[in-house]
Image (cartoon, rainbow, N blue to C red; front, side, top):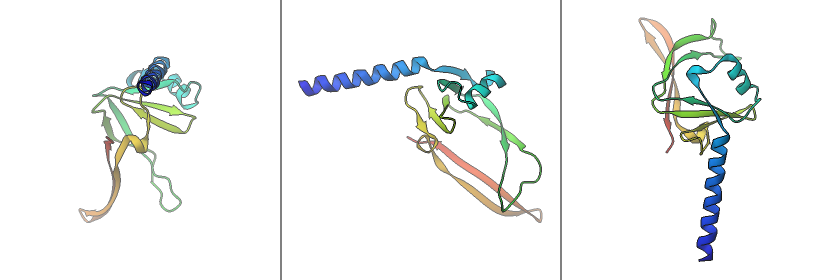
Length: 141
């Protein structure tokens, strides 16, 4: 009986902590985010700001490549758009680590939230060599 009471107390305390933490979060939707809001997030003025990516949201995708071996000629290029297939949340902690969540309670690093791979391929298209970069990323379950 004591073991059950202790487990119940620990579970209740954890649940209250998780609920309390999620209540303190300020959720901003990516589509209504202003430059001022983004600056606050990136400069870590408030670690309790969370960016929501609602299912169906479409966001432009840009590409850059910086290296001491190869150079991407030109500026960052707009490659197309990304579409959020499911609603998820992103939070920046300590100015260096992005955390991801589906429920605003359980937060995971990018490596614990996603699984997948990055690929690079060299091919010849219409007698011109080309390089293709690709990423396959799925929610880790």
